[in-house]
Every structure is written in structure tokens, then in C-alpha cells.
Amino acid sequence: SALDEGQSKISRHLAQLKRCGLLADRRKGQWVFYDLAANTPSWLRQLLDGLAADQPQLEDDRSRLVRAAC
Image (cartoon, rainbow, N blue to C red; front, side, top):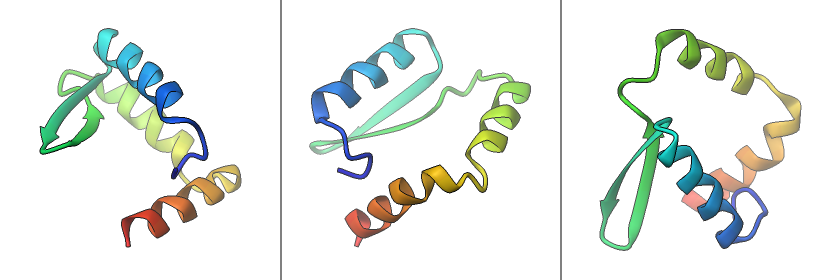
């Protein structure tokens, strides 16, 4: 709900990123938490951080995520 997309679509995208070795996941009960894989190069981490920082088009997603976490 935080991304305003269907669960199946998000799951497919996350699974593809995991297969490519870009994401790692951990399970806690019924929840799955994702993070960048430990072997992600630092240049790629910096690039992704820069892309995500202060992007006005991401504000709606951030707001939905904050509301969902409460």
C-alpha cells in the first residue's frame, strides 16, 4: 500500500532484484524485509542514495509509508 501498487506486482519486482543479487531478504513471521545485498558495490549504494534523496516525486510514497508504519 505504501507504493500504491498491487502486492503481486511488487513481489515480482522484488524477486527479480533478489535473483539479480541486488537485494537480500530476511523473514520475521509473515513479514519479509528487504535490503541491498551486502556485496553491493559502494558506488552503486551512493548512486541509489543520491537518486532517492530529496526527490519530490517520491513524497507521496514516503507519506504512505509513514502512515502504514503507524
